[in-house]
Image (cartoon, rainbow over all chains, first blue to last red):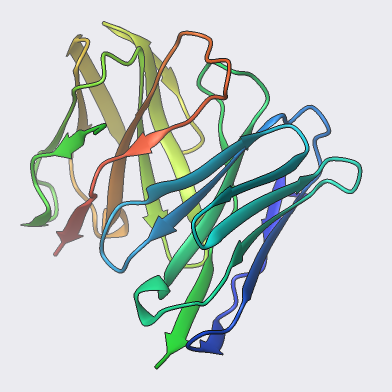
Length: 112
Length: 116
């Protein structure tokens, strides 16, 4: 079983829709959670990071962590064509160190 | 702004050639990484380094080596390129110091390598 599971999609939504992207994980020791956005032929760009459970909001983006269910989500409100990208989740156990675990990414297209 | 710079964005090399991919970070990070990314396989760790001259094998080190002579620079070397090494290569870095708000990893723009 993979440490981190992410539905690859593809996901296609109309402009203005609310998008929900999700990852599940198996290791209850994960405490730090990240979301990256990756445009075609570019490197992943850090979008949001959160610690432990709860919500974090940044503009149109909300990251949610449910540690009891080992489930994290990224919500995008009022989605725009410029949000079309692959979104990767990532997580780690410690607030330092060099062990990161990634989902395989969900491809999102926002249709104008 | 954090910055991880990969010097070569697109390369085409012949089978058997020695290939160098260079990466520089300006964040004074202790940890540096090389990943390859392939469709459907996600990110796979090749090597990482936690200090100058120190390195650890990742999940797929075969056919690769690395060099870290300075803290800010981490190089990936393909000793004898093969067609199955055609891929997107991503360099990344992270701090080795505890961060109250969490541990994050930062990526470069990627190097697209085609081996023919």
